[in-house]
Image 1 (tube, rainbow, N blue to C red):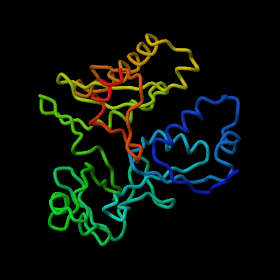
Image 2 (tube, helix red, strand yellow):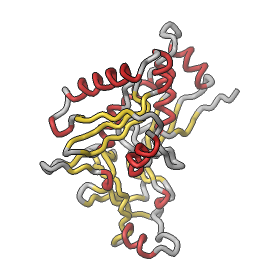
Image 3 (cartoon, one colour):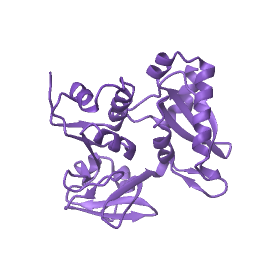
Image 4 (spheres, rainbow, N blue to C red):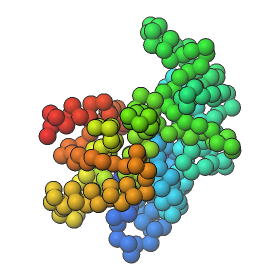
Length: 268
């Protein structure tokens, strides 16, 4: 049996592990459960590749495990910023490394520094689009707070622009919806000048509770109704699509967002 002190995980793994922990027998002490699941020595999990809701950081702390989020790209060799055991803030992606400069262009994170690539191999047009005046355009939207911690709040290309001019970062909403135990996978899309949640239910929960399709729909709609009460009108979910199949994912476990509805049409 492996007994690691430190592990690297993508957020999907952390979310999946937590849902299993949360569904375990409540009479089992958390320290005992953590020893069984993590091997007894695990103290730190570093994560990156996608945003992790601070909810999971707080919950893993209850099991004696610190979750530290970082941020990077292959184009930056690959780390841009990271939380550390000595200096961290939940919800952030840490402070930029010492060799990195950060700037913003209409909210997009720009990076300059010794770790930034010279360009894509034999791809001058793509290089020109990404590297401008020495700054790498990451495609991520974000900001730096007063303490110097970097935050991401969406992807530029994923922005949903409503007819009233409101710009919605779907990832922010998805991270909140994914906290529900019945939500296995979710993306939010802009349709009919509103927001639609496309959800693949958590199959272990469905099986454990013996839920029918109608019961799944009722439970998810009730959850969305509760969520909507906490949101301004333009951020409320007005549509629900329940998928029968998981989303197609990339090699880095990110949902291929642009293929979601095409995939639905084929599979359902």
